Image (cartoon, rainbow, N blue to C red):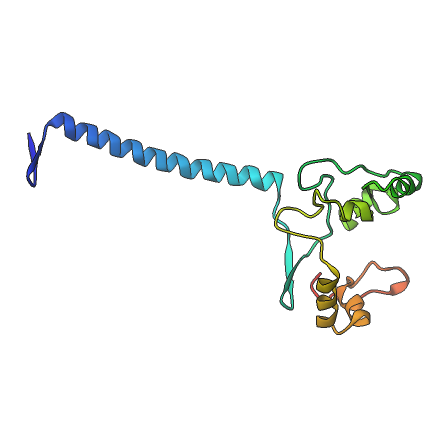
Length: 171
């Protein structure tokens, strides 16, 4: 018999408490490992988005490149100019690659029609939204107006007719 304060415990009581303590520690460790596994799965499903702070706003620093709405529904791909026009005429969401060339996907991401952008299922990934006109105005004002913002948003290379920008915005 072991005495603690005014209570007494048998060896069996102490062993049971020790086993309970070990079980709790094991569960905490397992919970910690499961949390890491869940985070890894979430990372694969929803990789983190690069972001850039411009003024007081945080923007994606890469082109949107999703094939599904936020709720998981697929966004139809327009694989030709005719498909793109048909989606517009039918008021249906669609995406395509620049020049309908999949090799352009890595550089430019995907292009979306208005019906995809404005769809209630959500085009932007979780935690993001499509900027509204006030947010665009705040952005362009921060960059010195629309003409200045265009140059500050464009990359330093790759534009036709040598119309490269300064990329001062960090986009």
